[in-house]
Length: 463
Ligand SMILES: C[S@@+](CC[C@H](N)C(=O)[O-])C[C@H]1O[C@@H](n2cnc3c(N)ncnc32)[C@H](O)[C@@H]1O
Image (cartoon, rainbow, N blue to C red; front, side, top):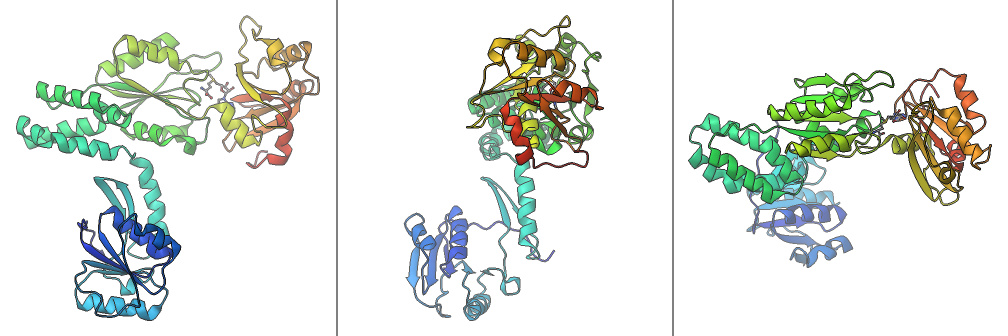
């Protein structure tokens, strides 16, 4: 290890920044976050630094740096573009045992700035030892996605209860289990969703029970997005990584499933058009039973759980049974497929509204408001519309849509297998019938489809 990581208390400590350009301004802002008392020495002061003067009560000395300037400082940063000044600052500070950082010059530094993930009081720092600050920043972005901003609030509550928990649960091993349950279970989730009061009440209740190992199950209804694994939300990923059980259906890809906790139990519940591995009512009951057995359950659904996803029915059962749950929205197929096909769903010159409908056939017919759907200046997105495509196009024409109204079918949108097939209401069913189409598919109808040729940006080997 070239640098030993420590966290330094800088509150009200005198810190010096030599230089007053853009880079110095960024360092000033960092030091100000730790409530340091900042002095700036520079012969020229940039607007960026002047703008920070009042905000951070900066003491700005407009002069050139000299070796007598360091007296009384706890820490020094040199951010000038003058190599001699930087060397002088580094030399003087090192002689006086004052930690010094010379920006972009690791050889002259006795300390370096890490990339910081600030969820105060929780702070994580990443360093590449000066080898590659960009790599450290990329790693920070990865870590940031795993630590939601609300971790700070979680830490505050843990601090508030720390001594009480110590009093009530004397045994250190039991105390550790208690805190693990609190910090990654339902209490943490309450805090992350802004229900701090409820979280504190629950924590109190756990303490009253004095068990320290109460394991309350809950369900996370999570939208897994339309296909590409990296279209998941941060929240979805976090919950997937802490769940004991993952209940998933056909639209959830193996790549997405791979992101769940390695040792979690995975339960497949269907559904394909003619093959429902488990009927909906049984899925509702399964979720409730798993939670009642103390499990944290992720119910992973393709797209968004509340768009043709029967998410409403699943949480209704959970509500009736008093089981904690939360719903995490996902990118719905309409949004994902349209974006990846270069077909904006609304456009000032084409469509002022967009309607999502299901093309699912019931008794060999589709019951939709055709008159409304045939009106101009709108986009219609049809989920589950492949089998009924011909009927859908026919019905729209019969209700007044032009035969040459552009229409597209998107196969396996957002994935490397995406294909976009375009035509018109009259021609699309025939074109599609001649192709080997792989589900899932989505149909988009409206003049926005003409934009596909121009705006198509996501190219796959298949298209
Ligand atoms: C039961 S619905 C579920 C919709 C999902 N809840 C959502 O918000 O996207 C399933 C239908 O969504 C559409 N679909 C889902 N993912 C898709 C994808 N990657 N490409 C094309 N269509 C997709 C298909 O029409 C499929 O038949």
